[in-house]
Image (tube, rainbow, N blue to C red; front, side):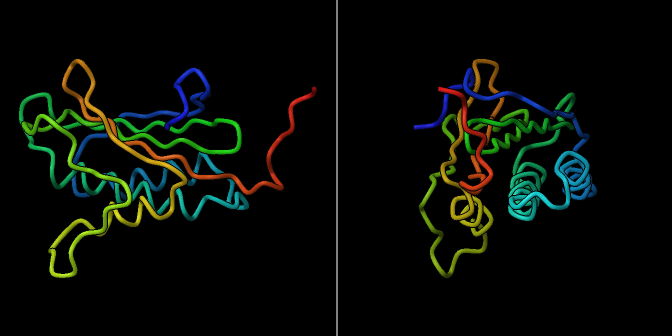
Length: 149
């Protein structure tokens, strides 16, 4: 079960125009937002690359559909990454965490990578038809900040 949005403090966000450079731009944003010494930075960079590439490749273009939003937040012991796009004509999300693509499949391995690097992940469609693909990446236990009791 994903953490409720109230349990996450959104730290950074940006809106990017969907072009061939968008995955690179998203990685650059993460590099600015997370310190080079952050132990989950490399995993977040891999995940953002996969999710943004999927949005750029699979979401239909059109008038006022050339954007995606990237959000980074923090929960207790994890980092939440969200990629929001204009949505697709398919009514239901096609991302099923933990389901690996068949070996002969031409695509789908990126989402499998996301699923494996994340402690939990998923997708949903907002009432406005926008698709949100999210994942939580665990912060190593030694770095958790203990709350006073």
